[in-house]
Length: 244
Ligand SMILES: O=C[C@H](O)COP(=O)(O)O
Image 1 (cartoon, rainbow, N blue to C red):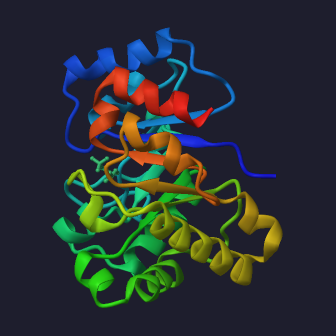
Image 2: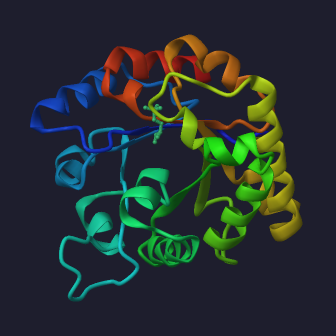
């Protein structure tokens, strides 16, 4: 049986106090319980938004529980604030902050230590796709970023082609299917069928109300990680509706 779908919104560095209205609108719509929803606002809003009916997550965490790490936030702090999950290894973190697969693996362990679901992002660059290196790139990121302790309950993987993020460009459905099938097979090889079949595989990269339904129809797509469209309640609600 396919896992329950998950629609996650990544607000990135958007969401000053005025954005609270987005979440309130979604809560007011009484989301269909057939679909899980996660909203990942900036860390400053986690405590304010937690406990309102939609799961809240962070966008990054440090691997240490505490210490001299100016500007960082521990997984335990996210949990204290009410977060249930944390996005890790997003390509913007990898690009802006030099995050490596090894660092993502340490952060993933930290998330699990704090009881958070890790939403680990992988995805090829345009140059890698053009060079025929898409699956090799994904394989390397999976191997380096996902620790051995992964289960269906503690891990979600988001496939986000870097060239599709915020660009309005999306892979073909066949290209999405190829990568999602590959990720599922890789997980089965590594973790066995039981865990691997339950780990949710999200697609991310220019998901909109107009393309969500066809993307959700692709095998092994268990939901979406939505950036820009998650900032508009109407659009995010339409993507959620397409998943249920
Ligand atoms: O985390 C979300 C992704 O980076 C996708 O962003 P986007 O929907 O704005 O393309």
